[in-house]
Image (cartoon, rainbow, N blue to C red):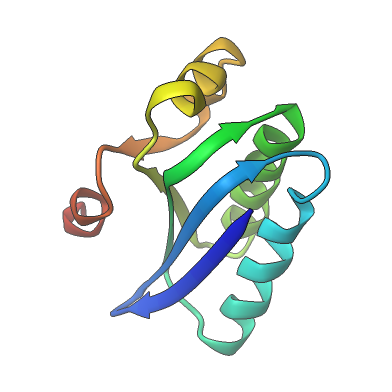
Length: 111
């Protein structure tokens, strides 16, 4: 899994690619938290358009990120959820826990 994070206005945008599995899912929260400590944001957008697969540990990592940032008063949004990733989130009913946008641009435009 690869994670690229950038700051855009009041948003942190994390572009995640590859597969998110038990072997690497912990990296998401640690990377996002470290970035947020250096460059605080009021919203975190996790762009999953480059993600080709996700397992239950990956879903757990997304949920853990949501809880962590919510406790800081930071909104966490998902973008680019499609294909196998979308199906996996839907089957696990995790899609109901997040505000999901088709694209990062759409998430950035949301108020």
